[in-house]
Amino acid sequence: MEAKFPLKEPDKLKRILAEKGSFLKKKLEEDVYFNSPFRDFKESDEALRVRKDEEGVTITYKGPKLDSETKTREEIKIKVDDFEKAVELLKKLGFKPVREVKKIRELYEVEGVLVCVDHVFNLGDFVEFEMDSEDVETAKEKIFSLAEELGFKREESLRESYLEMLERVKSNQ
Image (cartoon, rainbow, N blue to C red; front, top):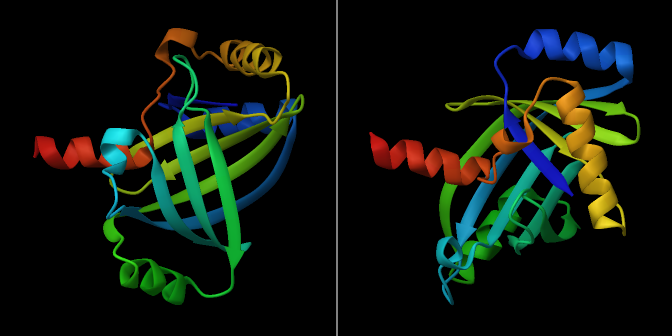
């Protein structure tokens, strides 16, 4: 379960998160997103990416969004050992690179919720609340409760991915 909000004062939020919970780490994430030769992922609300960060390299498939309030999706992740070869493999199979997304992510844990403070290059600052749980409704309520406690309104939750936002910004230029 995931919910994302625009963030106006990242430093203030980071101080509050450090007081309420635990700072976990800061990392750079570099993603390359692809479109499929078989169907248009933009139309089917799916995503395929290769990510490189301090934890290694992963290929991630994201299915369509699962509900109307959050950006929660089915995700399948595969660890690989070589970013460039993973990108090359997908290209050889006919997948087309769509866009690179780079962000600096700071991770906190607060009351069992993973809180990610993101600075997305060429886009801005955001906060994501994530929680894995079999009980989706309980997780959603816990996420929105913490978000509201921190000053974020449920109705301001963003369902767009960073890729979708960057594509929208590009098309508006």
